[in-house]
Length: 391
Image (cartoon, rainbow, N blue to C red; front, side):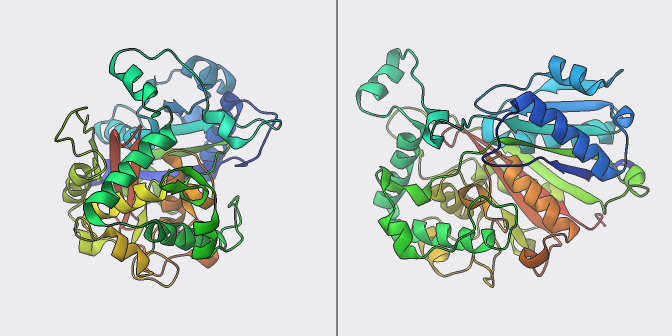
Protein backbone atom coordinates (compact mmCIF):
# COMPACT_ATOMS: atom_id res chain seq x y z
CA UNK A 1 0.00 0.00 0.00
CA UNK A 2 1.12 3.54 -0.67
CA UNK A 3 0.84 6.62 1.48
CA UNK A 4 2.32 7.90 4.72
CA UNK A 5 4.63 5.30 6.24
CA UNK A 6 3.36 6.12 9.72
CA UNK A 7 -0.26 5.45 8.83
CA UNK A 8 0.37 2.27 6.90
CA UNK A 9 -1.95 -0.42 8.29
CA UNK A 10 -0.76 -3.29 10.45
CA UNK A 11 -2.45 -6.05 12.41
CA UNK A 12 -1.50 -5.48 16.04
CA UNK A 13 -3.95 -7.72 17.90
CA UNK A 14 -5.35 -11.24 17.54
CA UNK A 15 -8.12 -12.64 19.73
CA UNK A 16 -9.29 -16.26 19.55
CA UNK A 17 -11.90 -17.75 21.85
CA UNK A 18 -12.20 -21.47 22.47
CA UNK A 19 -13.00 -23.04 19.10
CA UNK A 20 -14.82 -26.19 18.08
CA UNK A 21 -17.33 -28.13 20.17
CA UNK A 22 -17.83 -25.26 22.60
CA UNK A 23 -21.36 -24.84 23.92
CA UNK A 24 -23.32 -22.54 26.20
CA UNK A 25 -22.47 -19.26 24.48
CA UNK A 26 -24.13 -17.37 21.66
CA UNK A 27 -22.39 -16.07 18.56
CA UNK A 28 -22.73 -12.55 19.96
CA UNK A 29 -20.99 -13.56 23.19
CA UNK A 30 -18.20 -15.24 21.24
CA UNK A 31 -17.79 -12.05 19.19
CA UNK A 32 -17.55 -9.82 22.26
CA UNK A 33 -15.02 -12.16 23.88
CA UNK A 34 -12.91 -12.25 20.71
CA UNK A 35 -12.85 -8.45 20.53
CA UNK A 36 -11.74 -8.20 24.15
CA UNK A 37 -8.99 -10.75 23.54
CA UNK A 38 -7.71 -8.96 20.42
CA UNK A 39 -7.60 -5.60 22.19
CA UNK A 40 -5.79 -7.08 25.19
CA UNK A 41 -3.39 -8.96 22.89
CA UNK A 42 -2.39 -5.61 21.35
CA UNK A 43 -1.91 -4.04 24.78
CA UNK A 44 -4.75 -1.56 24.32
CA UNK A 45 -8.01 -0.81 26.15
CA UNK A 46 -11.52 -1.07 24.74
CA UNK A 47 -11.72 2.70 25.03
CA UNK A 48 -8.96 2.93 22.40
CA UNK A 49 -11.14 1.19 19.81
CA UNK A 50 -12.85 3.63 17.42
CA UNK A 51 -13.96 1.21 14.72
CA UNK A 52 -15.63 -2.21 14.56
CA UNK A 53 -16.43 -4.32 11.50
CA UNK A 54 -18.48 -7.43 12.24
CA UNK A 55 -19.37 -10.58 10.33
CA UNK A 56 -21.43 -13.54 11.50
CA UNK A 57 -21.79 -17.01 10.06
CA UNK A 58 -24.78 -19.21 9.45
CA UNK A 59 -26.31 -18.64 12.89
CA UNK A 60 -26.44 -14.87 12.24
CA UNK A 61 -25.98 -14.03 15.89
CA UNK A 62 -23.71 -10.99 15.63
CA UNK A 63 -25.19 -7.54 15.15
CA UNK A 64 -23.46 -4.21 15.65
CA UNK A 65 -26.01 -2.73 18.06
CA UNK A 66 -25.84 -5.63 20.51
CA UNK A 67 -22.07 -5.91 20.13
CA UNK A 68 -21.53 -2.23 20.91
CA UNK A 69 -23.80 -2.49 23.95
CA UNK A 70 -22.03 -5.63 25.19
CA UNK A 71 -18.60 -4.03 24.86
CA UNK A 72 -19.76 -0.60 26.07
CA UNK A 73 -17.60 1.17 23.50
CA UNK A 74 -18.68 4.72 22.73
CA UNK A 75 -18.11 7.42 20.13
CA UNK A 76 -17.04 4.99 17.41
CA UNK A 77 -16.00 6.54 14.12
CA UNK A 78 -16.64 3.37 12.13
CA UNK A 79 -19.24 0.66 12.80
CA UNK A 80 -20.82 -1.71 10.31
CA UNK A 81 -21.71 -5.30 9.52
CA UNK A 82 -20.22 -6.91 6.41
CA UNK A 83 -21.29 -10.03 4.58
CA UNK A 84 -19.48 -11.71 1.74
CA UNK A 85 -19.55 -15.10 3.45
CA UNK A 86 -16.14 -16.79 3.61
CA UNK A 87 -14.42 -13.88 1.87
CA UNK A 88 -15.64 -11.42 4.52
CA UNK A 89 -12.54 -11.55 6.74
CA UNK A 90 -10.31 -10.40 3.91
CA UNK A 91 -12.80 -7.73 2.91
CA UNK A 92 -13.09 -6.46 6.50
CA UNK A 93 -9.31 -6.28 6.77
CA UNK A 94 -9.15 -4.31 3.51
CA UNK A 95 -11.73 -1.76 4.66
CA UNK A 96 -10.14 -1.47 8.09
CA UNK A 97 -6.77 -0.88 6.43
CA UNK A 98 -8.20 1.85 4.22
CA UNK A 99 -9.88 3.46 7.23
CA UNK A 100 -6.61 3.55 9.16
CA UNK A 101 -4.60 4.75 6.18
CA UNK A 102 -7.05 7.57 5.45
CA UNK A 103 -7.34 8.67 9.08
CA UNK A 104 -11.01 7.76 9.26
CA UNK A 105 -10.23 5.61 12.33
CA UNK A 106 -7.17 4.70 14.38
CA UNK A 107 -7.88 1.29 15.93
CA UNK A 108 -10.34 -0.91 14.05
CA UNK A 109 -11.40 -4.38 15.18
CA UNK A 110 -12.63 -6.93 12.64
CA UNK A 111 -14.56 -9.79 14.21
CA UNK A 112 -16.24 -13.02 13.09
CA UNK A 113 -18.22 -15.35 15.32
CA UNK A 114 -20.63 -18.21 14.87
CA UNK A 115 -22.33 -20.85 17.01
CA UNK A 116 -24.10 -23.28 14.66
CA UNK A 117 -23.20 -26.47 16.56
CA UNK A 118 -25.56 -27.97 19.13
CA UNK A 119 -24.60 -30.61 21.70
CA UNK A 120 -27.60 -32.78 20.80
CA UNK A 121 -27.12 -32.68 17.01
CA UNK A 122 -24.46 -33.67 14.50
CA UNK A 123 -22.42 -31.10 12.63
CA UNK A 124 -24.43 -31.59 9.43
CA UNK A 125 -27.50 -30.16 11.13
CA UNK A 126 -25.87 -26.73 11.30
CA UNK A 127 -26.07 -26.36 7.51
CA UNK A 128 -29.31 -28.20 6.88
CA UNK A 129 -32.46 -26.23 6.23
CA UNK A 130 -35.31 -25.91 3.80
CA UNK A 131 -36.44 -22.77 2.04
CA UNK A 132 -38.85 -22.06 -0.73
CA UNK A 133 -37.13 -22.22 -4.10
CA UNK A 134 -38.54 -20.57 -7.22
CA UNK A 135 -37.44 -20.08 -10.82
CA UNK A 136 -34.09 -21.54 -11.81
CA UNK A 137 -33.32 -22.33 -8.19
CA UNK A 138 -36.38 -24.57 -8.15
CA UNK A 139 -35.03 -26.47 -11.16
CA UNK A 140 -31.75 -26.99 -9.30
CA UNK A 141 -33.65 -28.40 -6.37
CA UNK A 142 -35.57 -30.77 -8.61
CA UNK A 143 -32.27 -32.04 -9.99
CA UNK A 144 -30.91 -32.79 -6.51
CA UNK A 145 -28.62 -29.77 -6.19
CA UNK A 146 -30.06 -28.81 -2.83
CA UNK A 147 -26.97 -28.30 -0.67
CA UNK A 148 -23.61 -26.57 -0.55
CA UNK A 149 -21.97 -30.00 -0.60
CA UNK A 150 -23.77 -30.90 -3.83
CA UNK A 151 -22.82 -27.62 -5.54
CA UNK A 152 -19.14 -27.95 -4.64
CA UNK A 153 -19.27 -31.58 -5.74
CA UNK A 154 -20.53 -30.36 -9.11
CA UNK A 155 -17.60 -27.93 -9.34
CA UNK A 156 -15.09 -30.62 -8.40
CA UNK A 157 -16.57 -33.10 -10.89
CA UNK A 158 -16.38 -30.55 -13.70
CA UNK A 159 -12.68 -29.97 -12.93
CA UNK A 160 -12.12 -33.72 -12.91
CA UNK A 161 -13.83 -34.13 -16.27
CA UNK A 162 -11.89 -31.25 -17.81
CA UNK A 163 -8.41 -31.98 -16.47
CA UNK A 164 -8.34 -35.53 -15.14
CA UNK A 165 -8.12 -34.50 -11.50
CA UNK A 166 -8.64 -37.51 -9.19
CA UNK A 167 -10.11 -38.17 -5.77
CA UNK A 168 -6.71 -39.39 -4.61
CA UNK A 169 -5.20 -36.03 -5.52
CA UNK A 170 -7.84 -34.23 -3.47
CA UNK A 171 -7.05 -36.67 -0.68
CA UNK A 172 -3.42 -35.57 -0.71
CA UNK A 173 -4.58 -32.12 0.39
CA UNK A 174 -6.51 -33.55 3.34
CA UNK A 175 -3.53 -35.67 4.38
CA UNK A 176 -1.11 -32.73 4.18
CA UNK A 177 -3.32 -30.43 6.22
CA UNK A 178 -3.88 -33.07 8.91
CA UNK A 179 -0.09 -33.36 9.19
CA UNK A 180 0.03 -29.63 9.93
CA UNK A 181 -2.90 -29.91 12.37
CA UNK A 182 -1.01 -32.53 14.34
CA UNK A 183 1.40 -29.71 15.26
CA UNK A 184 -1.36 -27.27 16.24
CA UNK A 185 -2.62 -27.57 19.85
CA UNK A 186 -5.80 -25.66 18.94
CA UNK A 187 -6.82 -28.02 16.12
CA UNK A 188 -10.01 -30.05 16.52
CA UNK A 189 -8.56 -33.04 14.64
CA UNK A 190 -4.92 -33.92 15.27
CA UNK A 191 -4.65 -37.65 14.62
CA UNK A 192 -2.64 -38.26 11.41
CA UNK A 193 -4.43 -39.73 8.41
CA UNK A 194 -3.21 -41.56 5.33
CA UNK A 195 -4.52 -41.46 1.79
CA UNK A 196 -6.26 -44.77 2.44
CA UNK A 197 -8.24 -43.14 5.27
CA UNK A 198 -9.42 -40.48 2.86
CA UNK A 199 -10.45 -43.02 0.25
CA UNK A 200 -12.31 -45.10 2.84
CA UNK A 201 -14.21 -42.13 4.32
CA UNK A 202 -17.88 -42.09 3.39
CA UNK A 203 -19.14 -40.30 0.32
CA UNK A 204 -20.92 -37.01 1.09
CA UNK A 205 -21.68 -35.79 -2.43
CA UNK A 206 -19.88 -37.59 -5.22
CA UNK A 207 -16.93 -37.04 -5.68
CA UNK A 208 -16.48 -35.35 -2.27
CA UNK A 209 -15.87 -37.64 0.69
CA UNK A 210 -16.12 -36.84 4.38
CA UNK A 211 -12.42 -35.97 4.58
CA UNK A 212 -12.81 -33.56 1.67
CA UNK A 213 -15.19 -31.43 3.75
CA UNK A 214 -14.54 -28.82 6.42
CA UNK A 215 -15.40 -28.97 10.10
CA UNK A 216 -18.24 -27.13 11.81
CA UNK A 217 -17.09 -25.04 14.78
CA UNK A 218 -18.38 -22.64 17.40
CA UNK A 219 -16.30 -19.67 18.49
CA UNK A 220 -15.03 -16.26 17.54
CA UNK A 221 -11.87 -14.62 16.17
CA UNK A 222 -10.98 -10.94 15.97
CA UNK A 223 -8.04 -8.89 14.73
CA UNK A 224 -7.13 -5.31 15.56
CA UNK A 225 -5.86 -3.07 12.77
CA UNK A 226 -3.95 0.11 13.54
CA UNK A 227 -1.19 2.26 12.07
CA UNK A 228 2.49 1.35 11.93
CA UNK A 229 3.32 4.33 14.15
CA UNK A 230 0.85 3.28 16.82
CA UNK A 231 1.90 -0.36 16.66
CA UNK A 232 5.51 0.52 17.42
CA UNK A 233 4.54 1.04 21.07
CA UNK A 234 2.24 -1.96 21.38
CA UNK A 235 2.69 -5.45 22.80
CA UNK A 236 2.95 -7.65 19.70
CA UNK A 237 5.19 -7.54 16.63
CA UNK A 238 3.24 -5.78 13.87
CA UNK A 239 1.97 -7.71 10.86
CA UNK A 240 2.09 -5.40 7.87
CA UNK A 241 -0.78 -5.36 5.37
CA UNK A 242 0.96 -5.14 2.00
CA UNK A 243 -1.88 -5.75 -0.41
CA UNK A 244 -5.48 -6.85 -0.83
CA UNK A 245 -8.11 -7.35 -3.52
CA UNK A 246 -11.57 -8.83 -4.12
CA UNK A 247 -13.31 -10.63 -6.97
CA UNK A 248 -16.96 -11.65 -7.42
CA UNK A 249 -17.29 -13.78 -10.58
CA UNK A 250 -21.09 -14.19 -10.78
CA UNK A 251 -21.03 -17.31 -12.94
CA UNK A 252 -23.84 -17.34 -15.51
CA UNK A 253 -26.21 -20.29 -15.25
CA UNK A 254 -25.67 -21.05 -18.92
CA UNK A 255 -23.37 -22.79 -21.35
CA UNK A 256 -19.88 -21.30 -21.29
CA UNK A 257 -19.73 -20.68 -17.55
CA UNK A 258 -16.31 -21.17 -15.97
CA UNK A 259 -17.83 -22.54 -12.75
CA UNK A 260 -15.52 -25.22 -11.40
CA UNK A 261 -12.76 -24.28 -13.83
CA UNK A 262 -11.79 -20.77 -12.73
CA UNK A 263 -12.40 -18.95 -9.46
CA UNK A 264 -12.19 -15.36 -8.27
CA UNK A 265 -8.63 -16.11 -7.16
CA UNK A 266 -7.52 -15.63 -10.78
CA UNK A 267 -8.42 -11.93 -10.58
CA UNK A 268 -7.92 -11.09 -6.90
CA UNK A 269 -4.59 -12.89 -6.47
CA UNK A 270 -2.57 -10.97 -9.07
CA UNK A 271 -4.22 -7.69 -8.01
CA UNK A 272 -3.26 -8.15 -4.34
CA UNK A 273 0.29 -9.14 -5.25
CA UNK A 274 0.62 -6.09 -7.50
CA UNK A 275 -0.45 -3.80 -4.66
CA UNK A 276 2.08 -5.53 -2.43
CA UNK A 277 4.86 -5.15 -4.99
CA UNK A 278 5.40 -8.91 -4.90
CA UNK A 279 5.12 -11.91 -7.19
CA UNK A 280 4.11 -15.54 -6.80
CA UNK A 281 7.80 -16.44 -6.55
CA UNK A 282 8.07 -14.27 -3.41
CA UNK A 283 5.36 -16.11 -1.46
CA UNK A 284 6.70 -18.13 1.48
CA UNK A 285 3.47 -19.30 3.12
CA UNK A 286 -0.07 -19.80 1.81
CA UNK A 287 -3.13 -19.78 4.07
CA UNK A 288 -6.01 -20.80 1.83
CA UNK A 289 -9.74 -20.99 2.40
CA UNK A 290 -10.48 -24.72 2.44
CA UNK A 291 -14.17 -25.36 2.87
CA UNK A 292 -13.37 -28.35 0.65
CA UNK A 293 -10.13 -29.86 -0.62
CA UNK A 294 -11.19 -28.79 -4.10
CA UNK A 295 -11.24 -25.14 -3.05
CA UNK A 296 -7.54 -25.41 -2.18
CA UNK A 297 -6.72 -27.01 -5.52
CA UNK A 298 -8.49 -24.47 -7.73
CA UNK A 299 -7.09 -21.54 -5.72
CA UNK A 300 -3.53 -22.86 -6.16
CA UNK A 301 -4.08 -23.01 -9.91
CA UNK A 302 -5.72 -19.62 -10.19
CA UNK A 303 -3.08 -17.89 -8.08
CA UNK A 304 -0.49 -19.33 -10.45
CA UNK A 305 1.44 -21.75 -8.24
CA UNK A 306 0.89 -24.32 -10.95
CA UNK A 307 -0.64 -24.29 -14.42
CA UNK A 308 -4.37 -24.65 -14.93
CA UNK A 309 -5.25 -28.34 -14.87
CA UNK A 310 -1.99 -29.31 -13.14
CA UNK A 311 -3.22 -28.74 -9.60
CA UNK A 312 -3.79 -32.43 -9.01
CA UNK A 313 -0.21 -33.37 -9.81
CA UNK A 314 1.08 -30.43 -7.77
CA UNK A 315 -0.74 -31.31 -4.56
CA UNK A 316 0.06 -35.02 -4.95
CA UNK A 317 3.78 -34.17 -5.04
CA UNK A 318 3.87 -33.47 -1.30
CA UNK A 319 4.59 -29.77 -1.81
CA UNK A 320 1.92 -28.63 0.68
CA UNK A 321 2.84 -30.80 3.65
CA UNK A 322 5.38 -30.09 6.42
CA UNK A 323 8.80 -30.20 4.80
CA UNK A 324 7.34 -29.47 1.36
CA UNK A 325 8.30 -26.63 -0.94
CA UNK A 326 5.14 -24.57 -0.28
CA UNK A 327 3.71 -24.57 3.27
CA UNK A 328 -0.08 -24.42 2.90
CA UNK A 329 -2.59 -24.12 5.76
CA UNK A 330 0.05 -24.55 8.42
CA UNK A 331 -2.48 -24.81 11.25
CA UNK A 332 -4.54 -27.53 9.59
CA UNK A 333 -7.06 -25.20 8.00
CA UNK A 334 -10.80 -25.67 8.11
CA UNK A 335 -10.45 -29.33 7.18
CA UNK A 336 -8.70 -30.24 10.43
CA UNK A 337 -8.23 -27.22 12.74
CA UNK A 338 -11.39 -25.12 13.05
CA UNK A 339 -14.00 -23.52 10.79
CA UNK A 340 -14.23 -19.79 11.35
CA UNK A 341 -14.87 -18.82 7.74
CA UNK A 342 -12.15 -16.47 6.43
CA UNK A 343 -10.79 -15.88 9.91
CA UNK A 344 -9.33 -19.40 9.89
CA UNK A 345 -6.65 -18.68 7.25
CA UNK A 346 -6.24 -15.06 8.39
CA UNK A 347 -5.60 -15.94 12.04
CA UNK A 348 -3.02 -18.55 11.08
CA UNK A 349 -1.34 -16.02 8.79
CA UNK A 350 -0.98 -13.62 11.72
CA UNK A 351 0.49 -16.40 13.87
CA UNK A 352 2.98 -17.30 11.14
CA UNK A 353 3.93 -13.66 10.47
CA UNK A 354 4.62 -13.13 14.16
CA UNK A 355 6.79 -16.24 14.28
CA UNK A 356 4.51 -17.73 16.93
CA UNK A 357 3.79 -21.02 15.14
CA UNK A 358 5.91 -23.14 17.43
CA UNK A 359 6.32 -26.64 16.05
CA UNK A 360 4.41 -25.67 12.91
CA UNK A 361 6.27 -22.43 12.19
CA UNK A 362 7.21 -22.18 8.51
CA UNK A 363 10.95 -21.77 7.81
CA UNK A 364 10.37 -18.48 5.95
CA UNK A 365 7.57 -15.96 6.49
CA UNK A 366 8.54 -12.78 4.65
CA UNK A 367 5.49 -12.90 2.35
CA UNK A 368 2.28 -14.63 3.39
CA UNK A 369 -0.68 -14.90 1.04
CA UNK A 370 -4.20 -15.43 2.40
CA UNK A 371 -7.40 -16.31 0.56
CA UNK A 372 -11.07 -16.08 1.43
CA UNK A 373 -13.85 -17.77 -0.49
CA UNK A 374 -17.56 -17.11 -0.16
CA UNK A 375 -20.70 -18.74 -1.45
CA UNK A 376 -20.29 -21.42 -4.11
CA UNK A 377 -17.02 -19.99 -5.47
CA UNK A 378 -18.96 -16.74 -5.82
CA UNK A 379 -16.79 -14.34 -3.80
CA UNK A 380 -13.06 -14.14 -3.26
CA UNK A 381 -10.66 -12.02 -1.23
CA UNK A 382 -6.87 -12.07 -1.24
CA UNK A 383 -4.57 -10.51 1.32
CA UNK A 384 -0.76 -10.25 1.39
CA UNK A 385 0.89 -9.91 4.80
CA UNK A 386 4.45 -9.66 6.09
CA UNK A 387 6.35 -9.20 9.35
CA UNK A 388 8.44 -6.65 7.48
CA UNK A 389 7.50 -3.09 6.65
CA UNK A 390 7.30 -2.35 2.92
CA UNK A 391 10.41 -0.74 1.50
